[in-house]
Amino acid sequence: MLSRVADSFYWMSRYLERAEHSARVVEVYLGLTLDGDSDEAGQALLVSLGALAPRTDGAVRAGVSAGAAVADFVPPAERIDARFLEVVVRSITASRENARNIREKISGEMWEQLNRMYLLVREAEREKVWSEEPGALVRAVIEGAHLFHGITDSTLSHDEGWHYIQIGRFIERATTTAALLEARFSTPSPKGHGVSSVTEDYAEWVALLRACSAFEAYVRHYTADLRPERIAEFLLLNAEFPRSVRFVVDRVEDSLRAIARSLGRPSNGRPERFAGKLRAALNYSQIDEIMADNPLRYLESIRKQCDQVHTALYQTYITYSIEAAIAN
Image (cartoon, rainbow, N blue to C red; front, side, top):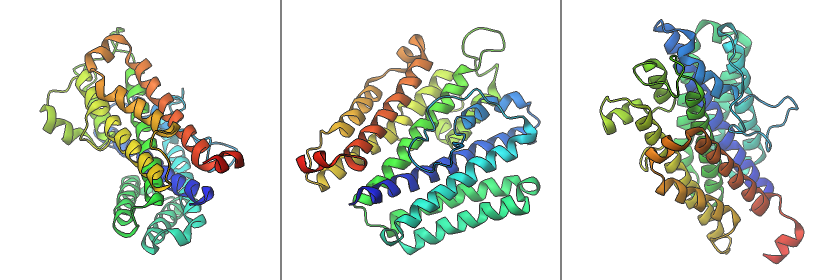
C-alpha cells in the first residue's frame, strides 16, 4: 500500500472518531443544562473538548493531537455552539477529504455515508440548525459515525487499509478517554482537598461515564455504586468495554501486528513495541496503585505513549526514508 493511501485511511478514521467524541461530549453537556444542573457540572467535559481545538493553519492531518494537553479553556455557555461546530465541521470535513483521496480504495457505501454527514453539518452551519435543534444535530452526528463504522466492517475487506482505519480510530479513542479522565481528576474537590467524591459531584461523575457511553455498562459491571476509583478502573483497565483504554490499545497492537505480517515484516518493529509496552502497562496496572500514586501522571503517560505509537507508525510506514524502504 502506498504511504499516502495508508495516511488517508488513518486520518479519515481518526478525524471521524474525533467528531463523534465531540458530539457525545456536547450531547451530555446539553443534557446537564436541560436537567437544571449548574454549568460547573459539565466544566470538565468542556475542558476535554477544548483539547480538541482545531489548528489555525488549516492543517487536516498530522500534528493534530487530541491528547496533546488538556487545554486551559472552558467556553462560556453562549459560545458552546460555535466551538462545537468548529470542531465537528472541520473534523468531518477533514475525514471526507481524506476519504476523497482514496475514493477508489473504499466502498461506495462508505463514501456516501461520509458525504451525508458532511452535508448534514454544512447545512446545519448554514441554516443555524444548532440554535434550534442542537440535540437532534449532535445525535445525528453520533449515529452517523456509528453507521459509517458498521458499513466499513460490512463492505470493506479486512486487509491492510481496514487495519489503518482501526488504528486511527482507536488511538484517537485512547487519547480522548484519557483527556476526559484527566480533566475530571484535575477538577479540585469543592471542599478543597484532592479528587472530589461521587457524593460531592455526582452529576459530574455520571456525565463522565455518559460522555464515554459507559454508564449502563458500568452499572452492569459494578451496580450503581459509583466511586471515582471504580470509574477510573472501568475506563482505563477493563478488557471488555470498547471505550476503555485497555480495550482499544489491545486492538491497536493487534492491527499493527497484522499490518507487519501482511508486509512480511517481523511483528516486533518500533510501532508494535511501543503498543506492546503500553498494553503490558495496562494489563498489569492496579487501580489502587494508580490512585495512591498520581492518576494525572498516569494519564499523561498514556497520552505520551499513544503519541509514541503514532510517531513510530508514521516513521515506519508513512514518512520513512528511501534508504529505510530499500533496507526493508
